[in-house]
Each structure stands twice: as C-alpha cells, then as structure tokens.
Amino acid sequence: MGSLVEDIRVIDTDSHVVEPADLWTSRVAAKWGDLVPHVLWDDKAGEDAWFIGDERVAPASSAAQAGWREYPPDHPPRLSEAEPETWEVNQRLAYMDRMGIHAQALYPNVAMFNANRLASLVDQDLQLAVVRAYNDWQTEWSAPAPDRLLPMASLPFWDIDATVVEMARCAEAGHRGVVFTQDPAFFGQPMLADRHWDPMWSAAEQLGLPINFHIGSSDTALLATTGHPDSGKHANYASIGVSFFMGNARTLAQLICSGICHRFPDLKFVSVESGIGWIPFAMDALDWQWDNCGVAVEHPEYDLRPSEYFRRQIFGCFWFERAALPYAIERLGPDNILYETDFPHPTSMSPGPATSAIEPKAFIEEVFAGIDRVDARKILHDNAARLYRLD
Image (cartoon, rainbow, N blue to C red; front, top):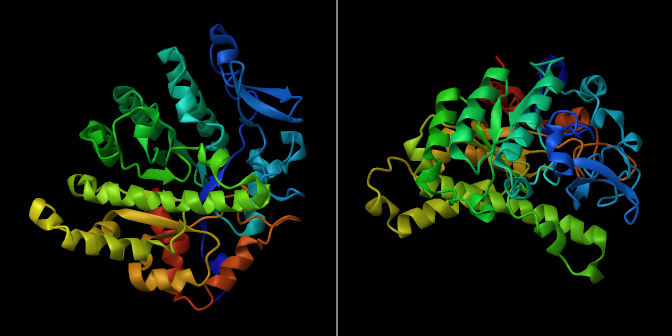
C-alpha cells in the first residue's frame, strides 16, 4: 500500500485562478467603454488594480499570494511578478502534480467579482455580459483538462430568470456547480430564505449542480472595517478570515430552518473555505434550538432534524485544521467533509517564504495518519467526485 496521494486522486474543492487583465475587455462589447472591468496602474497604491469606470475595485494581484515573499495583506504589485501557476493553466497543472492534487474546483476571486458593483451597473445587458464572459473564460481556461479543472459558474442573481438560463448554459458547458451569495439581501435582493429563489433551487436540483457558498460572498466591507489601526495590518488581516468563516454558520441555519433543504431534498450545498471544526457545535446548537423553540410543532412537514438535513445535503471543506478532523469525522461522519487548499489565496495551503503552510501532499500524509483509510478516501476523493460528477 502506497502513500495516500499515490493511492487516492485527491480533489481540492476550493482553489482560484487569478483573472487576466483582458478577461472582460477582450470579450465584452466595446460600446460600454470603461464600464467594462479593466486593469490600470494605480500610481498612488503602486500596483495594478481593477477598475469599473473610474472606480477602483480591487488590486489585480491580491489573490496571487502563493509563493509571495511578504505576508498578507501585502501582495505582488503586478501579475507578472506572481507565481505563474496562479494564472497560467499548464503551469497550474504541473503545480498540482507536484503538490499531489489530481483535480481542483475553480472559484472567482471575491475581491474582484464583487456582485454589488456588477449588479449596480446601469445597463442590464452589460451586467449579464460581464457574468457570461467570466463563465466563458472559466470554461475555456479549464478546457485543457476538463476532468481536473472544474469551473464553478457565477450567476446574474439579480435577475432570477437570467440566473436559471445561465445555470443551464453553464451546466451544458461543463461547469460542476454554481457560486451563490450567502446574503442576497445585502445586494438589495430577497433574503436567502425567501421563496423568490425557489426557481433557482429547483433548476440546480434538476441539473445536478451543487450550490457553493464561498466565504466573503456578501458584505465585503468587512475587509475595510475589521480591527483597529493600532493593532497592525497583519493582525487585522488575520482576524478577517476568522470572521468570514463564521459567517457560513448563519447560511447553514437559514438553509435548514427556512425549509429549503426539506423542499429540495436532492439539492446539495457546500460551505466553502470556512473550515469544519465549528460545524459539530453549530449542528448541536441548531438541534437544541429546534427542539426548544418548537420548530417541529410549527412545521410538522419537516421530517428531519437539522443535523439530519446536514448529513443528507450539506458539505464542509477544511484545509489547515488538524485536531478538528478526527472530531468532525466522529460527530458528522466522513461523508460530509471535503478537502481544499484555497490555492493561491493568502493563508492558503501554499508553501512559500511568508507562510507556515507545508506542501499539501505532506500535510495530507500527516493529518490523515490516524484516520481510517476508507474515511480518508471519502474525504480526499469520493465525496467530491460524487458531488461534482467526476466518476
């Protein structure tokens, strides 16, 4: 019997590709001019940055942290200074081979793909064109290895009809899931629990597309408001991630308590980049509140308790936790846990001069040393392969 990464085709269920500067300007009609997302050099900040119109959106290379020489939030000023595997497909595949990763789910970079700004564009045709261009780019970027590079579709969720159409289009193109915001109400849309979203849930269920809730997909103002300046930029940045992780506890509670899981029993949901150690507590707390608040009396149609809905339909991802893994397996079972690296984001499982991370293949061998081999195979491959239709 060989090592785990030799015996198991490891699936990384959360990674990112840094968008090229011409992603939108090369694909979206020139008639909209500089309203199309574009990259300009920002003299004041000393870096390339994304702009929509004359409004700066985000640094162009802040997500390309893997291998960078400085601690976050410092980042490469230009994409040309970042490691090429953060944006070039053949380099990415070679990197995955070195790290012991067979396949990666691909997500947009939260800071750039800011749904609030896109939804506020004055022209609805431009809104849709920007989303479709991004999804088309992901399709093309993944084409050299469609069973290893797994695109996740972004949605024009401010238009429910267009959302359903785009989901079907992306499913046909080979996308393995969709990305949805944790808090659509933040963007002026109905709450997550509102029946307004039922056509989307229904379409995703029929198409076999899991709904992925990536952290930071709602109020990104947290990036600018968390922490006191006297604490220091690195300490404040460290606190941001933890705050984002916990945001998905609210998401899971809404999915279950609103009856979404009950009404769409075959629809799967993933809590992405938020860890797993908190989930057993969250399910214990939700079961307790469920019983003591009389939810079963109020909703006799609900045939499961919260922890049971979770086991049937919801997955959590981990990438740095060690002690939490055996506990989560004991409490949740091995069938609802996925592995991720978050490559190439800050604090991802990406070795470099300014990180404590070790290579994923070494981490896997270390953290799964005491885990049953069957359970390890489920977490590292089988669960994700079934969820994203790889086998």
